[in-house]
Length: 167
Ligand SMILES: Cc1cc2nc3c(=O)[nH]c(=O)nc-3n(C[C@H](O)[C@H](O)[C@H](O)COP(=O)(O)O)c2cc1C
Image 1 (cartoon, rainbow, N blue to C red):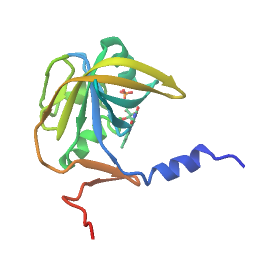
Image 2 (tube, rainbow, N blue to C red; image 1 turned 135 degrees about the vertical axis):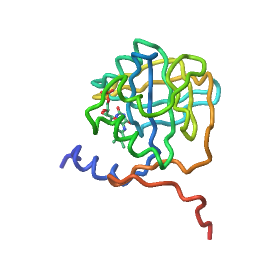
Image 3 (cartoon, rainbow, N blue to C red; image 1 turned 180 degrees about the horizontal axis):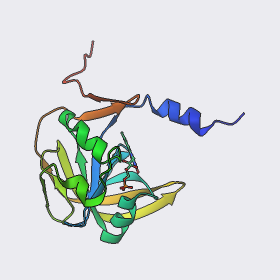
C-alpha cells in the first residue's frame, strides 16, 4: 500500500509552523508570498533555507534578483498573511500597499512591524519536485517587536504561548 500525498497533507496539517513572508525586488516591482517552510541552516555562514513553490511568481523573481528577505509575522498580521498567500485578489506590488516596508542591505523589502526580519543573498537553489530549496546567506537582520509570533496549525491562525510549563 502506498502512502498518498493526501495522507501526508493530513499529517502535516498538525505540524505547527511560524508564519513568514518571503519578499524580493524593489518598488514598484516587489513580490512576496506567505511561507511556513523556513528554517535556520548554518551558523557559519549565517544561512537559512526555505521551500518555495517553483510555480510561484515569487520564486522566479528571487532567482532573478538573487536576494530575498524572510519576515516572521506577529499575531496581528493574519490579514497580511492572507494577502500574501493569494487569499485576496492582490498580487505583486499591490500586496505591499497596506504596511510599511524598508530595506536593509540587499534592497529586498523588509516588513517594519515583523517580529524579526532576515535580509539574504541567494547562495543556492535546489529544485526538488514541485518546490525548490532556496538557501540564503543572512547579511543583515532586525527585530522590531516582542509580540508573539503567528503560528499556523490545522488550518488555523494562532499564537505562541509566552511560556510553556516544564512540570
Ligand atoms: C499558512 C500558509 C503557508 C504557506 N507556506 C508556503 C511555503 O512554505 N512555500 C510556498 O511556496 N508557498 C507557501 N504557501 C502558499 C503561498 O503563500 C501562495 O501560493 C502564494 O499565493 C504564492 O504567491 P505568488 O505566486 O504570487 O508568488 C503557504 C500558504 C499559507 C496560507
